[in-house]
Image (tube, rainbow, N blue to C red):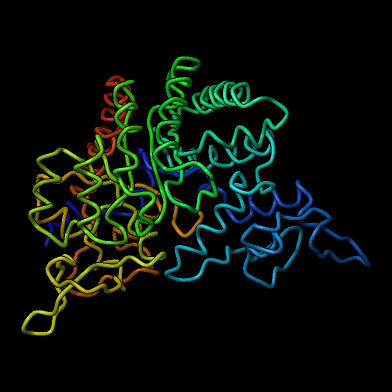
Amino acid sequence: MSDKSNVLTLGAIQELPLVDIHVHLPGTISPRTAWDLGVRNGFISIDNEHGGVSWRNGPNSLQLNAPFEHYSNIFKQPIILDNGPVNLEYNIDYQSFKSFDHIMATVQGHRHPPGGIQNESDLEFVLKRYMHDCIEQKVFYTELQQNIRIAYTIYSGLDTQEARLKLYSFLKRQIIEFAKHDIILRFIHCFNKTQASLSDSTTYNRAVEASEWLKEAHDAQPGVFVGIESAGHEKDESGWPAHLKAGYEAVRDIGLGCEAHGGEATGVEHMMDVIRMLPITRLAHGFQVIEDEKSIFEVMDRDVTLVMAPLINMKLGACLHTIADKDGHLIPKSKSHGGVKSYIDELYQHPFFKLIREYKGIKIALSSDNPYMAGRLIKESIIALAGLSSEYIFPDGTEPLRSDELVQCCLSGIDAAFCDDEIKQMYKSKLSDWIKKYRY
């Protein structure tokens, strides 16, 4: 157990400067922001009658192939109004990636437009709300993941290249706005690597296309898009790393960063295929590495940072492959060695804790991932990991996140960021001041 000097307090966490290097832009859209987008775009109508306020489905409709009949179906019902909605919550089923993905796709809208984001003004509205969150959370540096293809939705009157170039310029202006509040913002092109993308193009072609767009963005507006990411359920073979390899290698050759998702669904075997085949320096989630100790050491040898978001893992159904020992306790074991899928039921059981404590060379960063869509804002996540949230209980004999471990995660996060050394040193200086202030 740690001594008292390592115990985190709520006050210390609230003052901590943060980096958040894995954030999906649609995941920053809170239920209230999604509601406001629905009203702005005619999916929801507000009625003021007989001194009361009510809502109904608006005159505009989603596409027939959209995952919901009405935009309002993204929210749990009933919705109560009192100078605005008072009980909004996304209709995400527990341990259901599918329901989460359907809501994300509907709110963002570019997979089957129209959706919540329809024009530049909508996207600016979303980014302003996110900027406010960054100010509140004391986020110093953040990388937002967004598919460049959204340009075709918000600039539908332009040809494809003109739309992309206009998006790069718009995002550059947003970077400048964030900088006025001492927040360093960068973007990562993230595309769905599976058939859920609703694209007629193969994953190979979309990965190569991504590298071409990133080269275009790098030439037109340097420093706006700083890397590549691919997302989507690991079970879909169309998105496996062999199809992504050429595109990722082209992005690396441009000099931009490479990250991929892995180790959050099908097992450590698939995760290691991603790491071995793609030129990545960081992997999103990756907690299933606990299923095979040799893989842990390989991750360390390859100097890959695991970017974890334990709270959203819990909400979407974090699972490990396990076997029972002679006492009936479940221990992690890869599928190829007889492991059977079992869900992680409690936060303190998340592999994050065992990995950071028993494998001192491993690099783990914390992220918000999708802070409003099944996840939490990064500072709220840290508060929960530190045992300071009534929602997540740490039983006697289990130790929450310590200050030395949190500092380790912060340093791993900035070291893995796709930014220049000057920015990294600026953050480390701020973190050092925090350590001195709280005597950690």
